[in-house]
Image (tube, rainbow, N blue to C red; front, side, top):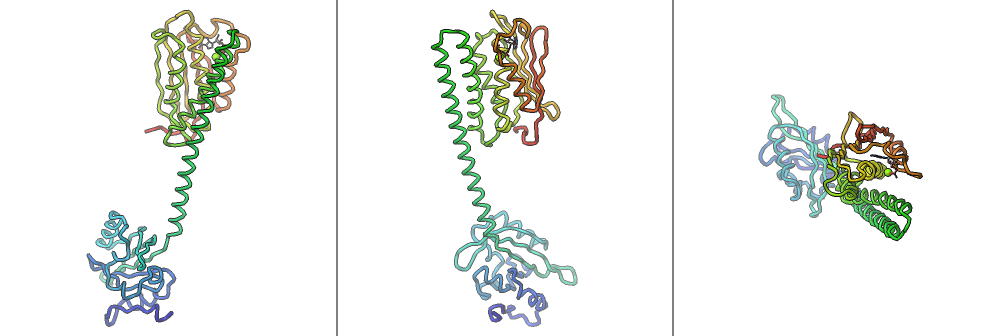
Length: 351
Ligand SMILES: Nc1ncnc2c1ncn2[C@@H]1O[C@H](COP(=O)(O)OP(=O)(O)O)[C@@H](O)[C@H]1O
Ligand SMILES: [Mg+2]
């Protein structure tokens, strides 16, 4: 053991750093000393722990440039940054792929500290090194696992979307075969609601950031579907929707809310070919998200609500679920439905 820890001191007589080296020799932490002589910065001391870690003998290391300890896969920028610190006589911390004598590489965390002489000039650098291979390995494993989970989540979104779309199609097929207009309307509404949920999962599937999607895309998609019920040119559509990221946990409720509010304006506000304007605004109001669907149509009280109508009740329930507030305004003419809900830190603006 003693023989192993003995490192020749480059033949210098009266080595001024002899006591420093003696102190570092038995340390369990790998330690190197490099001379402050650029551009090579030769290694002048390596303790036993370093030799064990690198698999080198003292003869292989001493006199070599410090660069000999880092592998050929070390990032050039990181090397240049360390070299700049050496040149400036400053301390430096960095992580490198280091070379072992057996050709293998290991992840080392290097910490470089300058040692100055009495005149204040940097004489040498002490480099301590920690093998962080296990940590790097864990990091890599976690990254791989995360990536696999993302792929799986995307796949699930895709399947959920397909199932919902198929359900909507089945319900619509059945609706078309029914004689009773009442029953047909009921089934069509069910299909629309399922379709709105399918839209959410289509967006979640397409989103690069799984678990969030852009509410602007959702609004555009739902409006695009619903507006088809009106003849072209009858209603002027105005969409003013900020790109806001919405977490998947709120997606279903938001989609259904938008579907009901926009669906109502499209179905009820402009009867008998009445011309008008439909405005959908989604944006922030301080720390809240405000969703406004406004029309200049016939107004809420134009006709008594049909028996069993459920849309407005559903909107109230959804607003409650989102911890928001739903209000109705008579715009004379027209109707404004507004939901204001708190948005947490997980919602952020898309760039
Ligand atoms: N934007 C609107 N303009 C005019 N009337 C509306 C509007 N929204 C809702 N209504 C009226 O409120 C009623 C109830 O709406 P809702 O609860 O969604 O049920 P449904 O849409 O199934 O009739 C509608 O039938 C309609 O008379
Ligand atoms: Mg309705």
